[in-house]
Image (cartoon, rainbow, N blue to C red; front, side, top):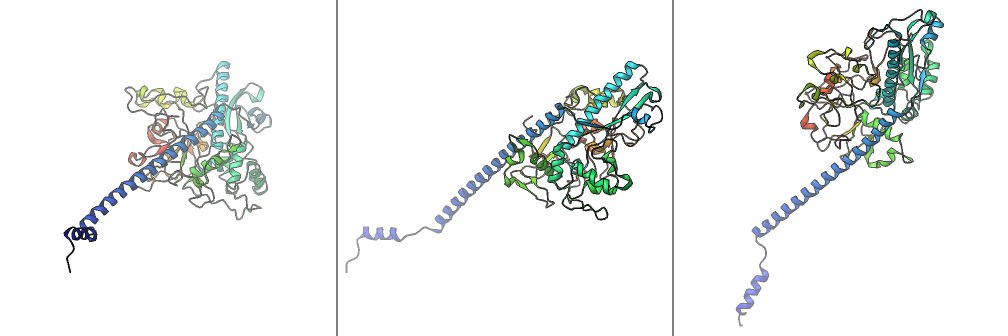
Length: 484
């Protein structure tokens, strides 16, 4: 039998020969490298898409919130007044003239000085009412939503018989409809229902604190029954003062939950603003019954209404690069204070320590800030009023659950006279130095212009929004990044 020809044998050998092990390993290695490159490219593209989406979201929400600030700064105020000081004198509640005192009073001896001072008192009333109004329509913590409008005091001078002298007066913002709607969404009683339930359950202490300026609702909240009514779950009817059922709202994501309530009650082109947010970005992550607004990583945003401690070109806070003290403390007027009525504008109230310019004590423009923790999920900021820092960098960040910008008041006996049924004189203040507040300290927080605990240290990073860890906050995405 003849052997196959040589060309046939070579062709047969080539046909039956497979890949060597080395060749297979090379091919697999190339495929792994290409797969890794593709995975990295897809992951990078996904991350960039999340960043872009979050940037667009925070900017849109921030602009909406700023538009609400602009509306409050320009819209007419609806105030409810208590009986005037003169009426109290005529009714025998006040007996004789009251002394004048407190920051910004000085020596007022002529009618012209008194008239000018009364004009400033009215301007201060308007300023404080706008601050309280923005607290009510843009709440950033539970206390903002829990507390009804605070009672605001102002002084007038009378020259009529027994009423001659300085007399106290009181007014409050009428509860805005949006505040009532937010409370309803959160399962809480409206202002009218608060008063109705308290009238039945408050006993001898019952008063219309939510709608009557003569009874400061924040001071009334120290009454356990009244506090239980403010926090009462409106779905539980009737209210039982012996077994109150306060709504269980955690503090973990309170500012994001407030943001949800704001958007759910803000009209935007015939819809509510929340309708513009996809359902996938709304979730109750902490299971307390109130949803949060989520960023592209599925984590709740944080909302800081007045980021006094935040380091941003948008906020004219302390600038360490300034060559002079005046450059280090630039001035940017508060849009709520057209007439410069804030007591910090009175240079006689400044301590004058350390050679600081007057502008160091002036209030500044504070745009509302929405912030995402970004890729690493860590903020590295002092946020809202709850302790969110689990590290040892600064463990005492939280303040008590009852703290709100409108609970700030004068220290006792530094501002007289005071209205008979409203002994606390409040000064709603977004510029409070939160770093000077002991962690979870009980009681009120005091308006302070002194060097220690003043707006100076708040501007230098002591207030809300202060950057505590630059490594953690480096990838944060905020609504201020675009310089709005």
